[in-house]
Image (cartoon, rainbow, N blue to C red; front, side, top):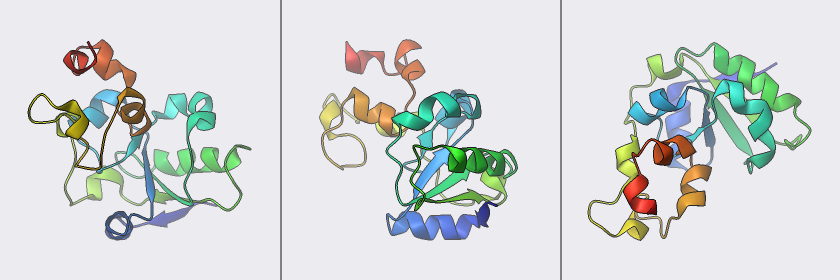
Length: 150
């Protein structure tokens, strides 16, 4: 069984930096707006990506309306590479009920030419770090971030 948490609870956990948010929507939806700091792993890529993720102690899975995130959370729980102590939940109501700030792909790009100062002033950021935080390889391939990586 997968627990469900409210968007208000997710926001509080984000403010306390105590949760990892996994957004299972497709990259284009994710780029238009996502919960700040969310990791984008589309539902169809979960099986191939689960080993690549450094799972934190508490994970909340999000989707448009809170239904497919329940299935994705069950799938994540079933993987051997996810520690038994990892608490995995679904965000009830999904993005439909999220009333807080959303981050977009453009929020990750520095306002000026110094790329190393982006990512909300958390320190130097490189291409693998961006990928780890949910910016999909397609952003570079589609030219959205191409100037930053030559």
